[in-house]
Length: 142
Image (tube, rainbow, N blue to C red; front, side, top):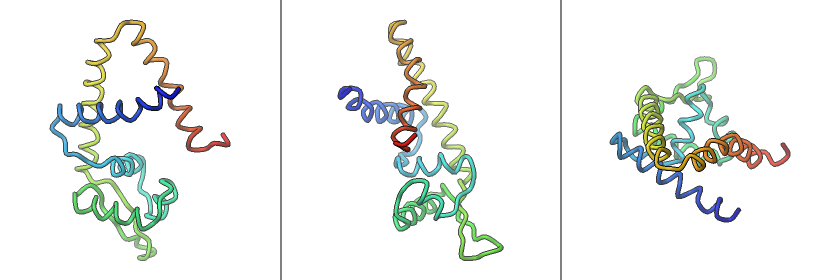
């Protein structure tokens, strides 16, 4: 199990680097990617993001400021309550995520082709287990 845990970070970084290089995508920090993945689904208030990501509001605020400067998010004041800010992913961010996802698929497919049939089957079988592990780590009582 130690080897499995030890290899997760290098796997993620290698896949991300290969996909970014293949598509000549900008180097967006992982924390910003995590925010954008949430914003793909719907808009969030800054408070909701802090709670969902389990981060301090000040950390989320700093993250969003950097993302806004990079053109990745838009911060919109709500018409019914100007104190509340809704955060949405920009069109640029959605395009970057789509390009990244396509490249990840291609880079991963190329690497998987070089595995043996048995190794490919093992990778295929691990997907559902990985999703379950993520849920258990996010909510230990589940």
